[in-house]
Image (cartoon, rainbow, N blue to C red; front, side):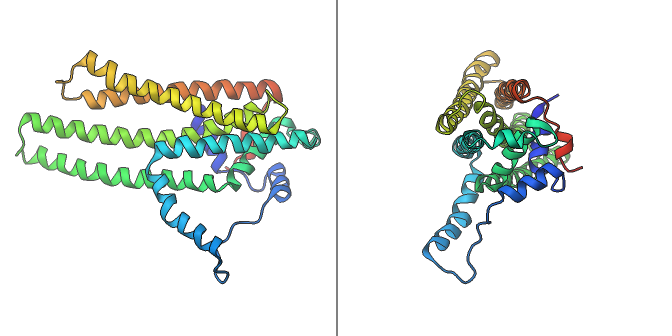
Length: 282
């Protein structure tokens, strides 16, 4: 069973009334960044411009968002959690019901949900689903018209089918990757704190590990999708592009899922069981 859907669900649906989450949220809550209604300072104006124009840009370019936002996110979570160890607060928190594993997860969720990056990823998922659904609907409608009113030749129909499948798989892959990148950055940030006692080392190490995993995954995707599969299948086969995307995308998802599973096992080994069902809203 894939860990990504389970961890993503737990991340975006924390139980606000779970005793541990409720108490830590009151302790660690930061004032929300509100855009001014009366305070028209230069800072607030620039923040509003950034969110109006640049946030949708990052959401519409998931690979860029995955590399840069996820890299920052992993380092942020690692640094913030390691600070709890450095200030000797984690040992006290670990005595709360649920044990250190639940406290570790809850702190990571709180830090991630407080970050502005979290909302960009969530908005990116929505925009990807919306744009992808619209494009696939248009291509599917054209394909349906071509099937019931055959005005296209056989090769043109195969090309249209291939284009529809390719675009559908592309948006599905981007959607899964945004969700998986958020989970991977969280688990990397949490796990790296088990290897060092310094917040700066944990922050830099988590960012580098996440960036390396993403870079290696996409390099493998490019090699498989644009090298191995076309050479193996042949460029004249009608469904080469969809088959290349399917093969390369499956490889990326599988590699990152293995990394998430290994990091999750590391957390269980060091901090014991993490009871997600207790901390997730039904």
